[in-house]
Structures are given as C-alpha cells and as structure tokens.
Amino acid sequence: MALLQILHFPDPRLHLKAHPVKLFDKELKVLVDDMAQTMYQNDGIGLAATQVDVQKRLIIIDISKSDEAKKLQAFVNPEIISRSGDVVGEEGCLSVPGVYESVRRSENISVKFQDLDGNVYTKDYTGLMSVCVQHEIDHLDGKVFVEYLSSLKQNFIKKKMKKIFKPQ
Ligand code: NI
Image 1 (spheres, rainbow, N blue to C red):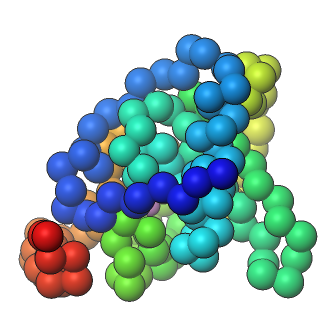
Image 2 (image 1 turned 180 degrees about the horizontal axis):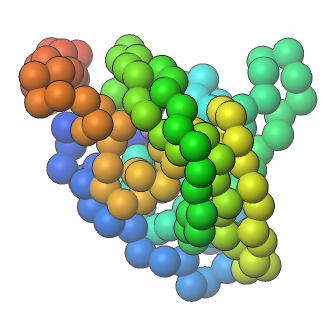
C-alpha cells in the first residue's frame, strides 16, 4: 500500500471530470487500498479518486466511528438515480483542510454503483452516508463543496489555502 498525495483547493485538477471505470482489475483494487490508507491517515470519512489526481469514477467512504470496526465501502461508477428531501449540514473535505461550512443536500438518495468486481447494486442512503456519497460524487464531476458557498467566502478560502500550501 502507498500513501497518495491529496490535491488541495483551488488546484485546477480538482475540476476535471472523471471517466467511467471499465476495467475491474487488480490495479483498481490497489488504487482502492492506497486511497483507503490515504483517507485513514488523514482522518477522512470519504475520498474520491479525483482528489488523488486519478480521473476514474471511484469513491470510498467509511463513516464508522474511531472506536468501531472499520467499514470501508467502495463505489465504482456511482450514479444518483433518485433523491428526495432537503438537509443542511456542516461539511469538510481533505482537499480543503480546516474548512467546515454548511451545505444543502438531498436528504435521501438512491445510488446505482458497481463493486470492485463489476457487480451492479442499487442502494438507498440517508443521513451522513447520503451526504457523503453526494459530496464524493461531486468530486468526480469536478466540484468541490466550497463551490456551493458565496464567491466572497470562496475567495477567502482560496486565500487561506494558498497561505497554507505555498507553491514550492
Ligand atoms: Ni471532499
């Protein structure tokens, strides 16, 4: 396993649209292992391939608490096929460390996705899991959660990130 480098907002590579996964091979499993190690190392609960500069439609999520057993879920080619309700909650992102802002999301979603072997599933999610899946799928479409905020707030966050991550 290997730790991967996480891109930070406003890196333009975070705005690339990821391509569908067609090969369910060993390489995909290795990528998931590396992404999982990277996510756990950074105390994250979700990570999209886009965030590690890989343009594949793949996200991983683990919302288990630190005192619970790990429960990693990988979604390949995830697609929201229906949604209902509204919920506003505070979100954070490993690509925008230290920033937590409220975002409006759908409360309930139905997601079609594949597992690492290509099997197709459709599952319903609500609560934190629903928000997480929506946040991560946004990454695959090149959208970072702070882009839901006012341009004033976004500019403030960009400045803050540039201070933290000065170019080498
Ligand atoms: Ni994120």
